[in-house]
Length: 69
Image (cartoon, rainbow, N blue to C red; front, top):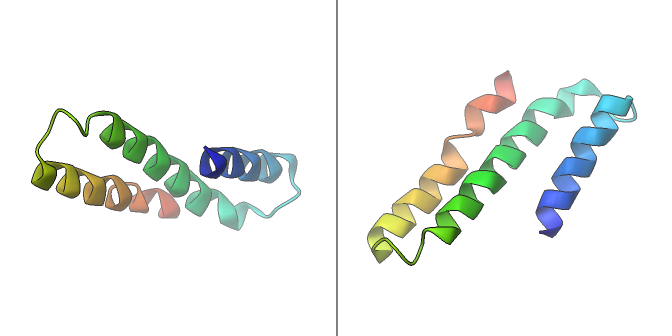
């Protein structure tokens, strides 16, 4: 929850112009990773341990291209 608040505050500060726009890509990637990781955590009881581990890894890797958008 704290990471979500921090990431949203970071995006808000970038939009206001307090921080430079070079941080917008990494902030988007962090927010995407947080959202996907939260979804994986909620579905954790319905999948096997191995599938949960793979989905957790993918939740952190998939948003990386957002850094370059």
